[in-house]
Length: 428
Image (cartoon, rainbow, N blue to C red; front, side):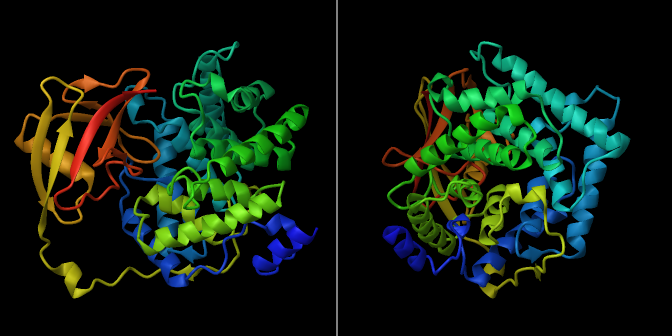
């Protein structure tokens, strides 16, 4: 008990073990700056740009966007109900994915709404059908893989859970088996963000007791997930990497198994996270929306019983400084593709602060370079380069010298002047 008491003293005298992983005393200016990044995205109301995660992140944060917030939820409702409840199957590709539908249900719960009525029941049925299809793809012998990912599979279970909608034990069982037998996965292991999302789903199921027959397995799986996330902490303090850390902390904050090791790891993660905030590492709206809740000591599990009356600070748009309004300069970035014959190398000139995606688009305009992407919950990712598509066990990796993999996606990474970026096809 002496070591535990010393740890609690270092944490500022938190009174209960269950609160051992809270990230407190964050500079309010840093938090507000993060929220201001989301405001322009809330003006993008086309169906392909609407993102329920933005609404969920704000509602679980200490910030609010006033009337813009209510208008955004209204736009989400119109878009999702029209696309998902329409009987027209001619444009099925335009319909939201399982992960997007799950996030929409989280957004409704973040507004203290329980999905219900004829339209709500159809949305729930649609999400359950998605999960059943994924369960079928995994197979009765667990040799297959979801059409999407275990991340989206977990997110779907979580979304139904916070609405108190039970899914069949066999659906939960597939996720439990994947965590219990991680070595059988296609990639050989779960990424940290996938582990965290699975853990959040398990936490909700345990607290809600929706699958009592699986309760013991869920408890053991939760412990396994927490253990793996703690082992994935880097020397700098991140869990996996800087962008998987917010979701990992959401799980650890909701942990029902607080320990001295957990408290120490969270202290280290807090320091790493604050350093990342100081260096403006978070620009992607999905990443920000996962980060804002933990800065308010919240997680997606809090959507079981959200507090919609908690006071939140009204966000004001960021004020532009004269330097921001000046005509930007240009940088030169070299693109290299070594996984094709003949290999490709080309220098591209783009405005300062351009993303890697901007570099790719510019290269496509003025050279033989071609690429293809696919949308995902964390932004677009490469599916083909120069006509060469990634196979079932391959992916296009982004590297900067010297052979350093990029942690950010093409929409988030801002290359520096003179930097060389390599696109390399690698196998799992």
